[in-house]
Length: 117
Image (spheres, rainbow, N blue to C red):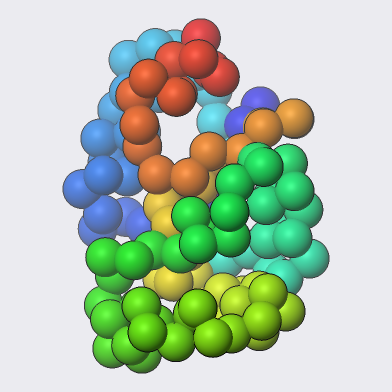
């Protein structure tokens, strides 16, 4: 079963969960705000995904903008970025889907079809 980190007020998350239900896919739901992934998990997920670390940041979120991360991230080490990402689930791109051998960030229907159907 896949694990899905979501935020209940996020419209993209709602759309993604509806897509999972419409396609009969079972999942374990985790609230990304209250039970966000720790640094070790984020490191593992990034390695599994093969994605650049920047793709794990919720660049449209309020905390990202308030912290001015678009300017700060390029000057931060990967260690600093992982540590920061692990401090607040609202900094993490959502929904974050973790399967046995894959990770998806955000809801892109074509990617989800490829990995989940």
